[in-house]
Image (cartoon, rainbow, N blue to C red; front, side):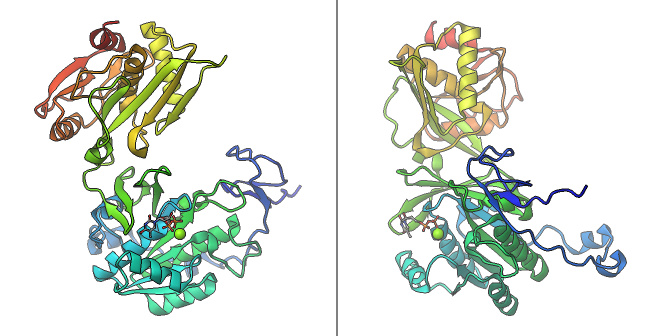
Length: 453
Ligand code: TYD
Ligand code: MG
């Protein structure tokens, strides 16, 4: 029996199904499945020898050493790209609508143009006049960038083929429309076709292409996740509404380290680079407060200090609340369970709130000990000693595991005026970076020594 065609596609994760359902089995998203007409499968190429040329790997090695990169001069952006823009690379910049992607890329376009690249900025969302207004506001009106407002993919590729820019920026991939694909703009088929076409153009012509993708919540429009696998580099622009900090994070990079971050601040005149994020994230901190703990973290290649804030209060509800911003909820539950079963400190009947100050998101398990310290400090209503940073991973047995880059963390803490660090025993011995070190083997010792419990 012939297999039923997978004409129903989840707009969130791109999984295909033979029939419609209310919830995607793959990613769990509700109302995200739409019917789409698949691309007609064209004639196959006759013989591999005729079409797919092969070359020995050794021929490549001698010709090209590391790819030549162009730095934009915006250090926060260059670092996240892995040291600058690589020719013939395809970059995806995802983020929530309104977070500042267009602002960032217009600034990037101007910087790359001033660094000597020929740049075309193609917008499918705004009129030229709007873009010009924005450029004026950002003080970039005189930058040598060419603008185009177009959504038809065929026209765009024709323009790019003629102009052969060093860099093409496409804002956004969801507004692009391929006339040979029979489904609505913004659908998975359209978004994939556009990403494929633009990536192919980048590889064939040696131009770099940066595509913008909106992260969508409603499931009607395909999100940037469905094209992540096609591009070389995936960056996400994040930030909490109500905070002016914006973080550009690389989640995939064929030409540099992943998990690198660049920090920006949204101002009245566009995005300003933040070269010392630790100072910024700690700027609103007062004296020692119960529930507040400074974590010495590493983001990509850079140490960053952030403040964890916890609040623990008797719950008026039958089921106590666990609320967390900027840290993983599952990991919080694990730490609460370890505190409860290994150290005998119950959190039942208590509401727990945990927050990372400044709208930063932390994914490192090295923050476990800082989280535990914040929770204990809030519960006991006792502040940690002043000028102390904390880091270390907690295992389910309650022992503390050493983490990488200890010396970098300590140096950054020293630079920002901290004098003491609480960290796990063991690990690679390095310098103390001028800090007093309190090393501990397990969580019970930590509880006893710091909180006398
Ligand atoms: P935008 O770049 O249009 O977001 P996106 O392309 O991700 O949808 O940015 C929109 C927000 O940024 C908007 O709320 C206004 C704010 N903004 C500033 O605060 N300062 C500025 O100089 C600019 C251009 C925008
Ligand atoms: Mg935009």
